Image 1 (cartoon, helix red, strand yellow):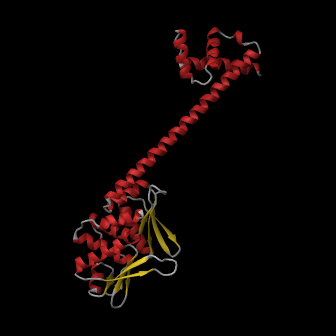
Image 2 (cartoon, rainbow, N blue to C red):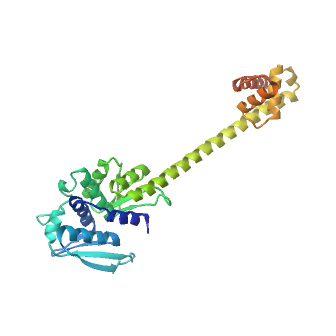
Image 3 (cartoon, helix red, strand yellow):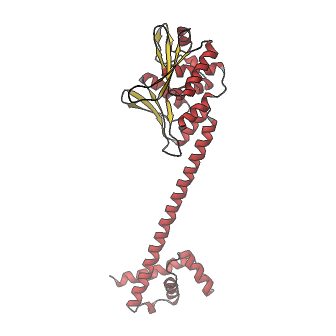
Length: 307
């Protein structure tokens, strides 16, 4: 079962109030429904969603839907679950704010979504009907809704961004895709629709991936520091050997000769480590800053010789 299907199964089993169910059903029927003169159909490829819609209509309108199962056409061979509702057709569609005086409404009336819980319920219906989300374990973070009408897509976008989810809209062929790519925002959406188990799974994966990425960045930074350290030490050794080759090394101050000899003896250690070694072995404390100052004197002498 896909991650999207797992979330939809969880959401279909939530305990909700009658008003919440009306809002959720409004989104489901609007996005999955086909309206005819004497009846309307709701079509989905998700068995759990079809069963959920069947139960919501039966519970809230005392209407039992006719269920048809068939194979998809053309390239889509998945099973389709078709709910056919003939009784109370107009009453149901008007109550769900899909029809008004026999005409299709572009967006539902505000009573469908005018408080916090109703917005959550409507978004739950949107996800069940046309939402999909990639599994964070196997792919990049991505949540999308595919909608047919631009005005309705803008309405859904406004509902999402009411919760500060930073959703965006994009035209895709003849439809409109609303999408989110920020991991934290997708986790927030799952919380909003009440998918608690999916949220925990998603957040665990997100935190693991972020920690892994942070560790990789630290390792890369540490590797860069090691390379820089080795490059600096190699340059210091080259300068010391240059002075020795030109019989100038013995002209250096005794303290500078001392640190130079220790650098030749310990070519791979950092300045801090070298300062600790010299301090311990000679009994004369020297700091990293003091070492840097003495190596700078060597460099200055080499530069003068090369002018």
